[in-house]
Figure 1 (cartoon, one colour):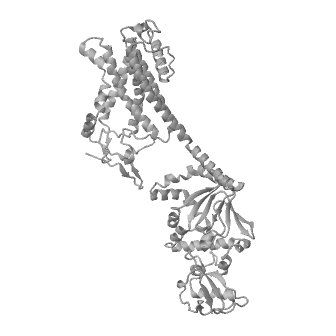
Figure 2 (cartoon, rainbow, N blue to C red; figure 1 turned 60 degrees about the vertical axis):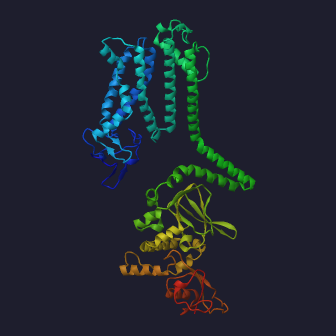
Figure 3 (tube, rainbow, N blue to C red; figure 1 turned 120 degrees about the vertical axis):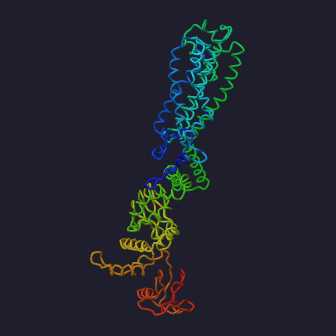
Length: 617
């Protein structure tokens, strides 16, 4: 026996995991398995074959006819409905063919999730299941068989009418169809549920109306029945009139209107009405419950948003917040609800890390590699960096970064624009504007200093957030990419205006420590370029992206400060020689020894810590 696995691998590495598909006869309509993956035996049909699904859908249309005709023929069999019998034979022939076809349809073994294509196993499974005898009983033309065996053109119509009610077994196909439609994201769930409720209601009205007419038709005193009181000699009336009266009574009773013009006249009808009204209680509760659920489900987002707004207004009122701050709170909350559909945080957090990383690659990779700081970096570095990025939305006039806050994140502006502001002498000053594709907050992160300025959105803006610590950990194993980041960052700082640089501490000092001239790409040799990179790396405070800041003095410890020898706050270089060179630029003299405040001499810079005070002698 061949048991082809449902997990097949494409040549390009893609995996189709069909084990997750429902083991029912047909999967959800939104699922389209690749039929080429089933290496089935000859004359075996895959249950998800497109042609087989079309055949099953066609049978559902015939089921609708059977659900209408079976009760109708029982009630009005003796009122000239012989043409329907021919149609019944035609419909039964299709279902008979489907019984034969089922012996050739593979099935999914729910214990192993393999597709079984063995003829014997398929036949045994179908015959032992309840579906086979019920399918057979609902398809056999009992009246025609009786006529052939008995040799008479007429039989007991009432008995065969009840046997034809076995066709209602086919309604299970309609239930399966609605179950698949409810799972199909291409079809409105509300529309599917409403259609299902309508079908259930129409069938209940039709079935009970036909049965109620049958009771009156076969009563020993036709004039003492619910319809006999209204229509004399109704047995010899038209089918249209009898069916109309039946549907009228059924709908009025189902809707609990009860005009009283058609009511039970004998004990049998009263008993039937009792059970019908009890059934109506359950059906009405089912319909009302489902409709209420659909309405509430469609409005739950609006209710949650209004509740959040009311809480904000109450909080602002109790704490007497300014009107402008209250408006910002409302705008941020409104944007949160509007962008929830785009972010889908509750969906992403339940996904495996590999899938989340793939989504981040698709969304952020192209944006990140185009920003100035990450230009020329390896694809591996960018791929790992974007795996933990988060997208955020900010309405207009909202502070994304606050001046002097610790640099926990820096941002890439995907859309919109922001203002870069600074507070000086108690007043707010505008520095410059950033557009899409720019970065914000990276200076504080790179220098490991409090954010030097405030970043405020000008209009609705989308940003992606990069974690400071994750970024530092990422750079350590990628030394070549770290050098490229330093180079890109240095060139960016050189391009800033002088007025902007003055507002950012350490930047001017850092740039003054760099070589005065960098060879151009056209006239530099590989050795010169490597030499420049080495100089930049040695003089850069960003080589490890976590610099140590120290104060240097140009005098002996405990010596009084002279003019021009005020301490300088610098970022610790990588070597003692570089430290002497920086001290020479600051104090105008080159030292030969480094001591601490207690007089101990420093021989290894790696022993120093942040905010140490050094004396260059």
